[in-house]
Length: 336
Image 1 (cartoon, rainbow, N blue to C red):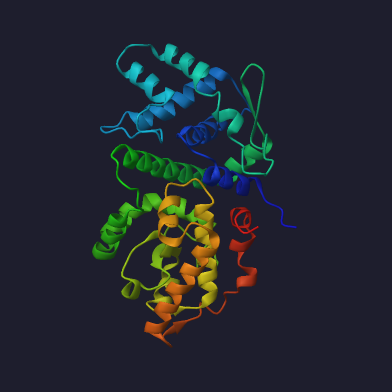
Image 2 (image 1 turned 90 degrees about the vertical axis):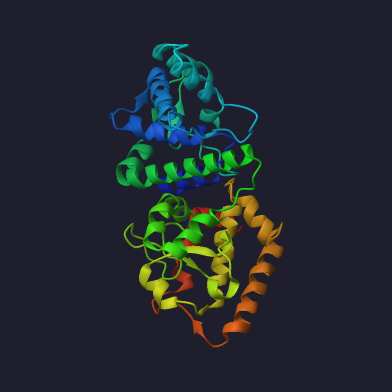
């Protein structure tokens, strides 16, 4: 039986937690920030102050983004920051309001992860509303702080983007405009795409799609599994992260069918979450796993008809049976 690390569970909570608002992401960032004080117990006042600080950072922008999936409503935090910015309340009053109104749902629901019991893994709540950070949380932050913060930031960006799209009555699509810019303008787009990479890494477990080795920040390419020259689109379901040399080696060749099987599971990982791209994938791939699997296979067969023997089976070292992607919690959750 595979044993999962606290880091695996943290990633799954951030990727698969139900996010009607951005509170869970803000709480994650708050806990990481407060853990730097090297003490396990966080008072309600400390928690409220840092939670408020996280929202002030997000909302005190020239064009603040919506924090709730319902375009007709504002979160408690949006209201409190608005009151603070307009001198309707003091900083201390704002912190008190946060403590009284912001944590009723997010703290008891933070650890919820489907049928898995992760309650109390990262913190435990006390009767006085203070929190005790666990040793497992402190160790995870110590070893993976930068990665955790990057993933939380990317997740927050994407939730805000989805909320904005709902507000403007537009369908939320993976920034095809981003991807098109990448394809047309090369290095200029890489800067635009960088903000999305940490989140995409989560669904690939931070490994190259083709060789299954760890991805490094300086060597991450976005690739079309089925060559764009044939499919002629930049839809999310066909996009993966890869090392530069793997991407170049593959080029515009037809990949082995085992990579299509892996792509199916990667896409099911995203659909299994509450990610804003879920609806986009279902729209293109189908409403249930069987239809989605059939869709992938049909698209693969079409490309195979065009490319024939122009084939790439992967790097010599790749073995699907030892690929860590298949042993990660988020993959197993969606292939049971």
